[in-house]
Each structure stands twice: as structure tokens, then as C-alpha cells.
Length: 80
Image (tube, rainbow, N blue to C red):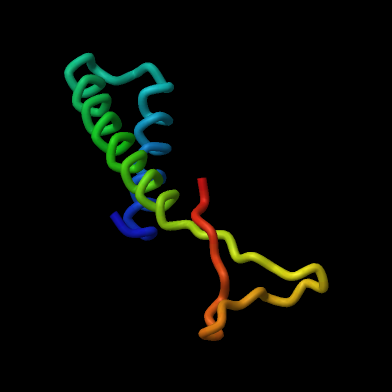
């Protein structure tokens, strides 16, 4: 799931929540929306967990400049 898909999914979740909070839906439609919301939440959680694994923090020197490796690439550390 890409960022745009994540944003679309979150927007859809907001829409579902708003409809369900109205309390005017028949039970069958409420159940369908609940199932859709559950799938969206699962997909969003998976996407966010994958993104968290990819995040790296850049290490800076005291003067604020970017600390680099001997090959000139920025020094990084895994985000946890």
C-alpha cells in the first residue's frame, strides 16, 4: 500500500465511521461497513509497520552538519 493508498484508506475509514455513528443504517449494511473497515485497518497497520521498518535516522555532528561515512554517504542508524 502506497502513501496515496494509505491516505485513501484513512479517508474511507473516516467516512465509514461517520455513517455508522449516525445510527441510521440497517444491521446488514452496518456489518458490511464494519467488515470493510476491519480490512482497511488491517491494511493500514501493515503499511505503517512496513514504513517504520524502513525509517532511518540521520546522524549529525555537533555543529549540525551531516555525519558521513568514508565513502561520502550519510551515516544512518536503524529506527526502532
